[in-house]
View 1 (tube, helix red, strand yellow):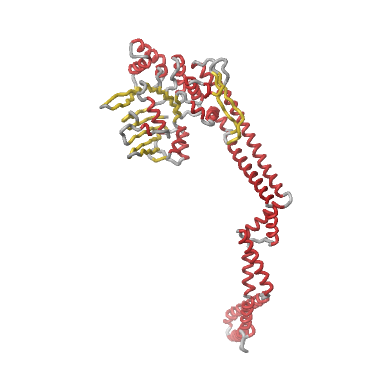
View 2: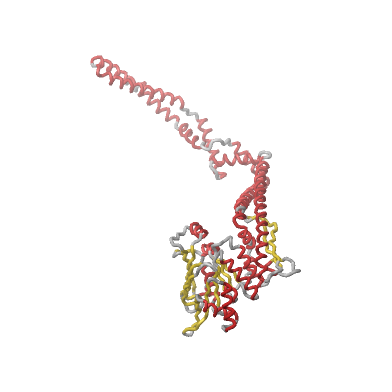
Length: 557
């Protein structure tokens, strides 16, 4: 709900601050007084065009509005990661004129926000309707969106499966089309692909780590002679001795014998003797391990040459195709599947099956949504005609046309409102056959039908009752009153019947001060002031119209 509005240097308004309440609010005044300025200001605040609103001669202009927090608004703030510690949302837009450049900035509770955020916020706050607003009807999908809003939660429960199934089908369809394209490419280049597979098969690629293993083996084979020499030197010193000198084992055996004699003289040396025996046993194990290693050493030049040839082959394949060994193996396996007789076809059949299943699910979800839309359409037709007939449209006919359309995330329905106001006139698209007055009444009736779907949004009507008779304006007033029982409603009007039905009444007037024109907005709080304004709307402030105005207020009460 809109709770307050402040303007600074906007159009003909130098400074203005207003507070608003629940229910039905009207703005009245002479033509050109500036009634629509307030609605234009709110439109500009929520992302509309605003340069023309800056007061002439001013370098700065401000529009600021406060809104009570609703559950949808709180959810939006959470999605945008914006905090609001207050009970109200304060939205502002400031213009600054510097040299020939005009800039503006949006703020939400003092935090700068971008235009995209403001435009996504707008549907949660305000719904502006102007007389003859046919451009709304012309927006792609607008009539379908209205129908879906009217259908409410029961219809919306089908929307998510439709969106998800359509996206799944798009993915399956894209995968199938890509596979078909790949198949055509493969067929066109079959011989080259087959030769490539043959080369990879000939290489007998199996282990992605083969290169590192071969490098280790190459190092061992390449240094086999030096390693053998090292083993012989070690074995000579440990076992055989050098230059007729005793070996390490000979020295240790002598030491062991000496310890045995010493132990006989002193028993306390038994532990030392045992430790020495363990060390000797470890050395003997080491010698046996060294001997086994020597047996494994090869210095066969043929083996080394074969290994190096294998490494060269792997390096060549990697360099030629720009892939490492693991990628080459995966590529080989893919080519095997593709080039095997029937392999490509089997893959295509699997993808075709996936696409077919996704399409069937998409169509099933679309059908359920279409059925829900047809049920909502029947209810909307009945409610709309009930609202339209009292407004001078006794012979009105209205139908929601639902025709098949290309599937999309919103389903597979093209929705068009069909309208006929006169007997003998066939149903035709509303935007093509409805007059300005008929369009105004239709939009008012439609917004009334949609009231239950978005109760938190403020409705603003700009002279929607223009061009209608007094009887019709009375019916429109009753409809606006009923609408305001569910949500906040504003209406700029010249009709006394509409103005009299309001809960709150603001008068807009022009005055000249110091040679400058100013717009003044005053809330009419007492009955006498409202009577005088209603009398002006009815044709002039004199006795007969005063009595008429008084009767309107009495009847509205």
